Length: 194
Image 1: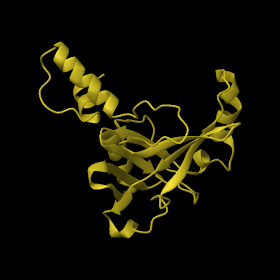
Image 2 (image 1 turned 90 degrees about the vertical axis):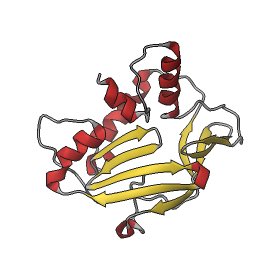
Image 3 (image 1 turned 135 degrees about the vertical axis):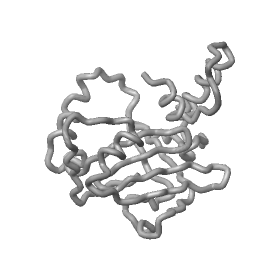
Image 4 (image 1 turned 180 degrees about the vertical axis):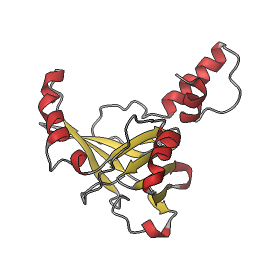
C-alpha cells in the first residue's frame, strides 16, 4: 500500500514522518471521517452525517433507512438537469429486517445483479470512491466529483463527460485503478443517480 496515496484519499494533510501516537490518532480519525460514522438503531432519530441527515424508521416487519439530502449545486450548466443528480429531498436508501443472515443468503441476489440483462450493473459501468469530503464516480461516460458542504447547506456536484482516450487516465488518477485490458464502457439508458 502506498501510504501517501492513502493519506491523500482520506484527506490527510501535512507531514507524517513521525510515527507517534498523536499521528496514529490523527490518521485513525481522518480514516473514520472519510467513511460513514456509526449510527444508532433508533426509530425516527435524525442522525447528522457528512452526506446528509439519516434516520431509521421501524415499520414493524422491516426497518427503513432514509436520507435527507441538502440542496444541490451543479457546477457544469450542461448537467443542470441531469438525471444523475438526485432531486428528491428525502429518499429510502435501504430496507432490512433484524433477522440474522449468513453469507449464503446473498448469493442469489449477487448473481442476479451480475448476470441479469436488466440489472443496473449489466447496463452501466460504475466505479465509485468515497473521499474525505464526498465521493467520486464514473457512471458510463460521466465523471463526477461530489463535495459535501454541510456548513453551507449544499452538496456541490461537478460532472463532465469523458472521452474514450481519457478513461484509463481517469481510472488511474481518480480511483487508483489500472486495468490489464482496455475498458469497454457500458452506458445503456437506465435509472441511476449519484
